[in-house]
Image (cartoon, rainbow, N blue to C red; front, side, top):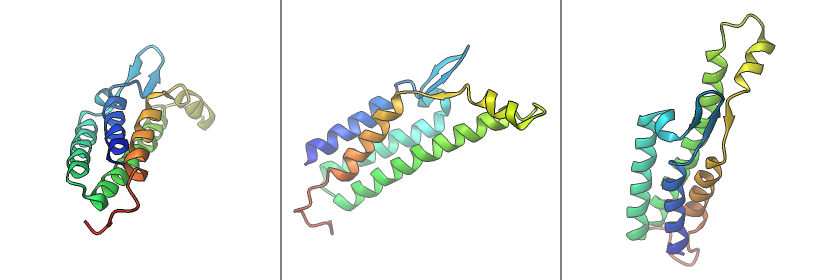
Length: 131
């Protein structure tokens, strides 16, 4: 099952370079353009996940994968809230939500979530989880 987890780590790392946001007139943004500190955290957690997979620390791998999923959800919520806040100068709420709706999530999130899910669920159930 380690191979599935390794594929998950690779998908998370590759997914961070793929387009995650589509902003009209600006283009596609990946994790580095969204926030360099957040991308550093993603890459650090991926490196820790790779280390724990190699050392067969199953609980630690699961914690890292759960942390990645939480961080992805946190990023998506922060993007939506920031886009609403960016258009707060508009006088009507309907205008704010309409203009904030032009910021679209892109297909790179699929790789991010699938990679983290493979890390989380790719654990061999026959092994002792107390490692």
